[in-house]
Amino acid sequence: MEVKRAVHVAVVVGMAAVLGLAGCTGAPAPDQGSQAGPAQSEPAKKTVEQKAAELYRGVLADPMAYFGHLEEQGLAEGVSFEYALVEATGDDVPELLVRASGTSDLWNGIMEIMPFAVSDDGSELVVPSVWLNEGVAGAGGFRGSVSASAYGDGLLVSETSSGSGEGTVWRYTWDDAARPQRIVCDTQIGSDSMAARLVENELVTIDWVSYAPGKTDLDELEDVAALEAGEWKPTEDLLEKDPADAARELGLIVLTGSVHQLDNQGIADLQGVENPNPGSTGLGMSAVLQLDGPTTVTAMSGDGMGSREGEAKLVMLDREASELDWGGYQGQHMTVAIDPTLLRWPSDTSLPLGEPSVARGGVAVLAVGE
Image (cartoon, rainbow, N blue to C red):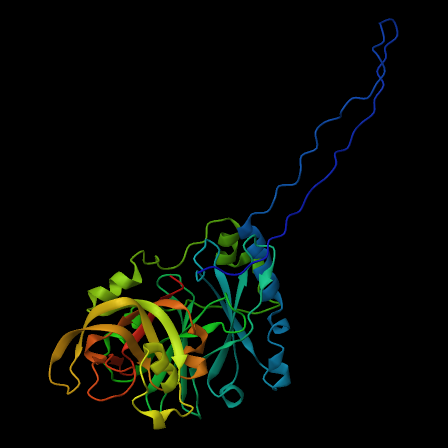
């Protein structure tokens, strides 16, 4: 996953010249002219890691410059900060996460995280367009966590309602400032979904470091110094296994195709059939995966009695898809992993006609644009 980065090239022009005259009494004088003086070495160019470390120290020196909304919300008093370096964009330069927290009476048990990155050449700071929430709310039922990816693929943001037990795992990336988070998998507390288990296996706990802006000597932060020296390494080795292979090992079905968010009439048009339920064209939208080609899959029978094999061209991913959930994938090619025990052939004329549907929590997005 690449971060959109701007590259700037600096050109150093010019070299000093020294004019000298040489002469000596009693000896033939050489021709007068100019001679180049000692070569002046250009200053060593900073590495991408050195430039990133410098930019990150600037953020850590004054984090409130980026958490200005805390003052507007009356949360700045007594705020404390932590930071972490995490590999999340598939390159050798880690991203900087800064976490702010405060007293429970003001913050309701929630912390805020801002994820920073740098441009490809390390010359510019990529400031996040949103902040991420983590913690357990004292009121409101929110439970959330932010984890690193075992594949170095963005950040995994989990949100769960303590009331319903339903939740969602999102992947935060830096490739789209307007929509930095996209759904990975729906979850349910107590569910034994293999898709959710696959995502859980990708979660890596972030090691946070406490520090005090204006008091802590930023030059003594070991991991930032290691980054500057080109020696920073993740605390855990990133997995080299293909996520699709990991999914197959768990028994999941791996499918590729293009995502469409459509109403019932749109799905019927996509299939090239008459809408069998013309009175159900309401405003509800569904997310369907149009497979790259007819694919043989094994899914549960419509009556729930055993399973059967059949050919699928479409798969219903979500019958109640919101713009926040699947809208960001509209028209994009993706690879998904599906729990076969939560994939079912239809027993009625629901759309897509004759095609299988996935129950909530049964699908995980593995890759996009591949």
